[in-house]
Length: 460
Image (cartoon, rainbow, N blue to C red; front, side):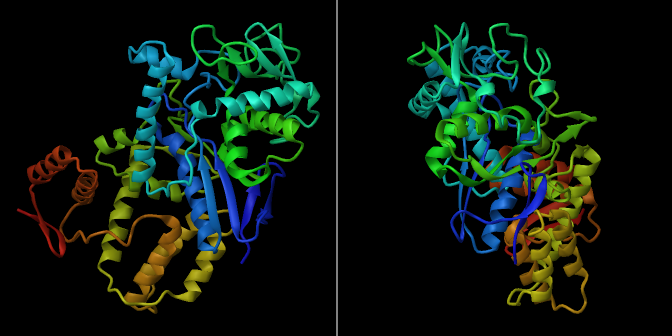
């Protein structure tokens, strides 16, 4: 059965035809590690994980790369504003040195890995860091310079988009709309408003280059790392929809201008998570982290479940009521699955339907609904139900094969939510939080016991 994917570049669904039969090479724009990732950021990696799992479910061998931007990303996606890593140094009272920058970046890199691990995202084959590829950045800029694609002005080396006539082809971006001030601050030295930096000068901080000390442009880093680890072209490039207009068009322009071949065959983008009808963003201060959710006794797997209930190309509005509803649904599902006997065989009729849904541009809402249909089907034995659901969970990634049964009789949903949050804390060896949750459960009139058969909860 074919996999069809929505390609932003052609604005149509296309059958996935990899460059190498049976293999899928994919690159996902990773975080700038200057702060904790917010849940809007993390949607991109759950989406990428579903893409990976779908390919693996269909027998592909996947090679996946998520880059780590630890240098060179300004606050905006253009070439204006403060550098994000410099901003982090000032926020945390660190000296303005490369060593301190990489120390801060390493802390938030590990926090990011912890986040996606807790979301049950399969880790990629590579996490290349921008700071470790400066030589590659310089090499591609020299190629662009030799080809007549760059020029130097007071604050850096810039790519001249007029030398790449196809600029803006991703998302059908109109250059007529890229007037001064529309996307970046006015810079009278730039030849074209949409020209972008491939190297930014900084006499105090950064790396030496043929053009002067400074940092690589944010966009050039991805071109270098994707080519190094995946080749050019590779199969699939993903990111959030905010990357389409600027970052990904810039990647395409510099990579194709430098090497004369397409960067990627398929371009895929996930929609935003909104909060109070506005885009969730760290720069605006309105963002929620997984840590914030845990403080509300909401587990990361609950957030994953909630994301799966919406299609990756549809915006989702975060509310505490919606996430509580998702948590209660996940707890019910975990309880039902854990009570089913082992030893069954997956229903091929259901598996074929599930594969058809998930292969249709990763339609997780229909796939998740089908899981619930299985639980209610009286024509499927309990053992076969379990086998069928666990087979589907190879894509959904809800860890249904590891859950313990939480009896629900006479136990309110808010108590089962606390029990599940305690299990999450124990899994992360956060014993202080686990003990606090136990105390909260007992304060609400219930006792909790850990037994060989699972967790026992009952009213006092």
